[in-house]
Image (cartoon, rainbow, N blue to C red; front, side, top):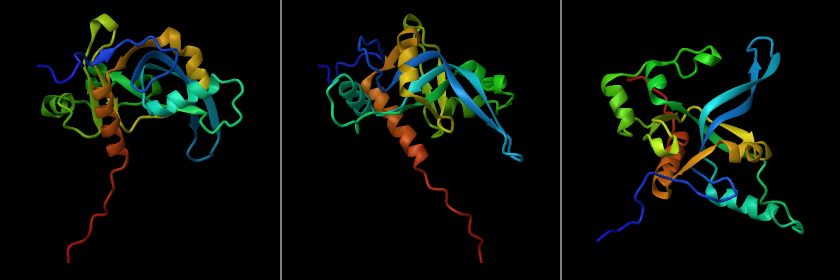
Length: 193
């Protein structure tokens, strides 16, 4: 007897709308490079090899449905941007080279520390298994790295860059872990008397 009909971590949907848990490849974003001292900035383009859509699915659905009604009088369901998390290829992440193109050298991960990431035991990271049939490599999401992309820009890229969607229970797990990480409370270190 099976309690769930979910038999894979990923699905490929045929929806015309963006869904929470969608995995997209080669997404270009606008990056603001701001000098800490002068405050001067430069706008450049950055390419993310993989991203995961994190915006709640109900909000994405409301946005899509209301924009599909040309006679809609109210626009409070419209989204201006979509929350995404970059997803890094695990072998590149492990070496600390996943942000090398931005001129950043990151921590290397090995041994038990890397094993904890793969087992979802490190609250900062989320591991996604490989699925060769859907062209999804082993990916790691760092919950400290997230950004938004304008809704209309993401829709322009969507069909060409969509790979798969994280299945509902796995998507809910990712969403809960992400929100838990973002809502953590940093407590001060108190001096002992």
